[in-house]
Image (cartoon, rainbow, N blue to C red; front, side, top):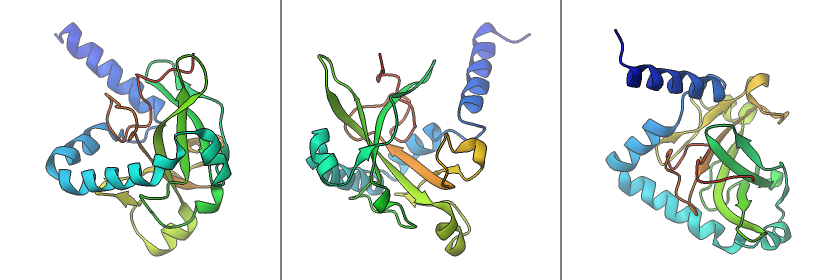
Length: 184
């Protein structure tokens, strides 16, 4: 007989897999990398922070070519991502930690938006023409959004990776949803 705790854990794992369109969650591999290859990951996170520090004000991001690309994205039990501001001119077949394609903002207490994360997006077709595996950033693999049902309304087959560099994510630095972010 299974324990109630094990059943809850199994149910949570199944729900998480379904919520991520069957894609493996980045939580365990990313956090394992943080401890095992910390230097490379920490260097990449520092480079992302340096590259995005100028965008704490959404007006600065818009002046640099980022534009609103989504409403506030939330999940019923995983938390939220926030509002995505994308610079689609940066979407290509490269990964540059200092120039993320998407900036993620969360509602700030008292109004306004605050920068919480960066998201990297790589166009699948040019990447796949030259590589046999998804892109990686500091040893962390990108999520695969090539299948139409995995694109969440984005017409472009792509790979992406969130990096929570401006707000701690208890689910993992590279996990898409953050339980401490709310769209409410």
